[in-house]
Amino acid sequence: MRGVVILAASAKTKRYLISKEYEEIKKDLLDQLDRNGTIGKYYVDLVNDYMGMWVTKCLLVDDIQQRGVSVKYNNGGGQSGYKKNDSVAEFNKTNAQMLKLLSELGVKPSKSDGDLDEEEEM
View 1 (tube, helix red, strand yellow):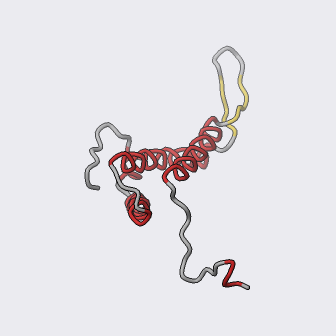
View 2: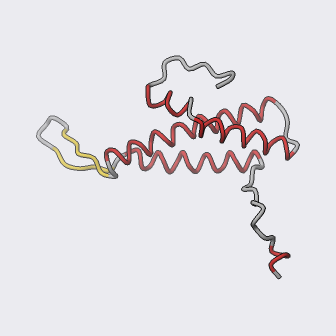
């Protein structure tokens, strides 16, 4: 991974930062910006922000899959039970922010060669 220094990241975080999927998504975003004529360090920084959120989203998904949507609690004062897993709400917030950032960058899903435009369907 070029240009990124991984210092005090957890093992799970490092796993995502050095993953092939991370590199492919980042490259795709940068390629789309280039195709759109969107240039500048500001936009590259926004892509890096997006990728940071992507890692966070992956970690939240891991937590939800591991612990579930409800987690057991015990406050030590004799009260215990289940509460919602805070990762669910954080996942939703992170995902919404990622979508906003893509919109700000002007990144749209690209059509594959097999997809037809509305005009072609008629």
